[in-house]
Length: 130
Image (tube, rainbow, N blue to C red; front, top):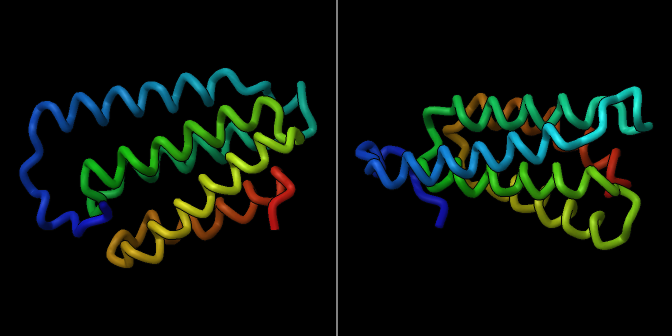
């Protein structure tokens, strides 16, 4: 599933369309989160936006890896609507674990690695995840 981006130098229009659709879904989910003044979860929306931007900009992630990472951002955004609900916390924990696993498997994705190691602990704290 997670593969070296160098083996995917050629992307198909279908890959690009799929990635664009997933990115749009993630953006829409993030935009539905309450603003910082409406909730005690200050910064959730901005953290997810930052994570989305770094995933989309990372050249060392294949389109498939970007799509998988953006799906996790979407899950986190949807969980952020009710972060104290046990089911949402479980979904957030799974999404964060998947993203952490991607970091471990994709050491050449330097920007993704650096930003994710900064952002994911903050998101875990927001969701009450250890």
